Amino acid sequence: MPTIKAVNLTRKFGDLTAVNNLNLEVEEGEIFGLVGPDGAGKSTTMRLLTSILDPTSGEAWVYGKHVVKETETLKDNIAYMSQRFGLYEDLTVIENINFYADIFCVPPEQRPGKIKELLGFSGLTPFKERFAGKLSGGMKQKLGLACALIHTPKVLFLDEPTNGVDPVSRRDFWRILYDLLKEKVTILYSTSYLDEAERCKKVGFLHKGKLLKCNTPDAIKEEYKTKTLEEAFIIAIKDHEK
Image 1 (tube, rainbow, N blue to C red):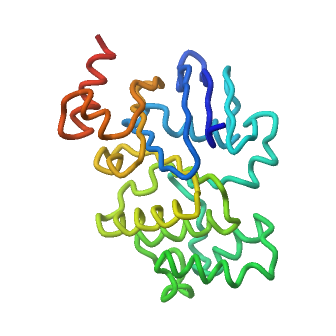
Image 2 (cartoon, rainbow, N blue to C red; image 1 turned 90 degrees about the vertical axis):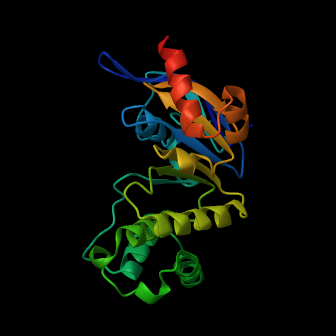
Image 3 (cartoon, rainbow, N blue to C red; image 1 turned 60 degrees about the horizontal axis):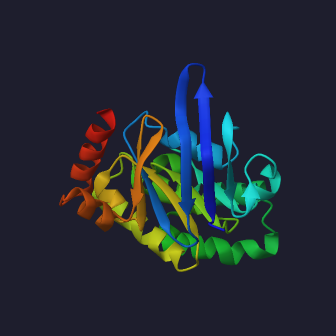
């Protein structure tokens, strides 16, 4: 069974259908890019798959757990980094990480090694005593990721994590994600940046709650006879609107 699977997943808010009959499969150890503009339904999809929202209809499973019926056991195996991840700016880097270790009930004997590892691979070791509020945007995102990873999740949900982050920090962030793949962590990554989507193993074009296309970046560009995913996305939307 795929690590993430959605079958006819739908979420309505009154007359608005934010996610419309979504069918999606993400395999273990891959980065899947959910691509679309603001209002496409990316965040709602993330919240449905992380059991924050209940679907109006349809079903979904993450790491073999049903997102509605097995919510508590699901949360032990996933991490969700929203667009506004809840860092505490009046706490230091190390205090934020320890706070999330408390939330996820990480045993005290496991923390020193795990924290050292997270600080090292995120490049935050020299800044561990700095207040989170004094960090740059890129550093805050890396700290947010470190906090999300403190309990060693199997599936990682990242909702536009590099929005507004400078190019150098964005590159560093992706280096960290590729390192996670070596540990077979499955990543669902939403973005409105088509150049970022090129880095994913597979991408899904989301528009007004509908999944228009799902395949590898190269396969999609070949299908639409384009050089970039951005060009392919524009064509996919025009075809859908017709």
